[in-house]
Image: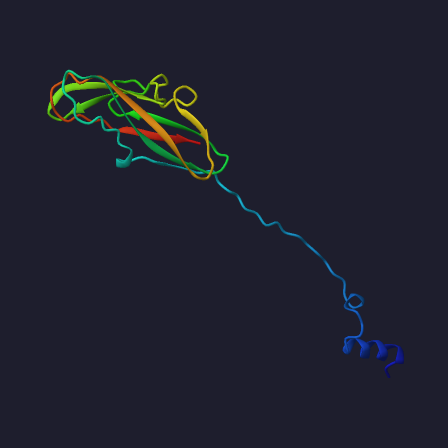
Length: 167
């Protein structure tokens, strides 16, 4: 036969009148919520960034032209932008040669980081690249170019410049 001592607590528990803490033990654990933001940079150049000296006659000297490239890096991400002309003559100091498919002439040119043409571009980090810090927004980076003389065989001349962002 069931005792009264057992029946009353059992009846109260069945009705929900006894706190659960008196009926069972508990255990707890924790976990973390994690997120890693990876630094990124994008560089925009292409046809919109072409530097076009335009048309000149052979007697003209000290030609100058400029345009912009654009870099977008994660906020507070340090970066370096380097420029390397394709037809460099084995140098990496921002100088190149414009070539023509119809002439053997090579027209030397230089790329500069400043409008005074005193800081050459290159692709050696810490030596001749442009350093900056990302803001999360697109940043404009001007590129200046010079040609000493137009005294070459008439025709169209070009070179391709590789833009590298190191971050």
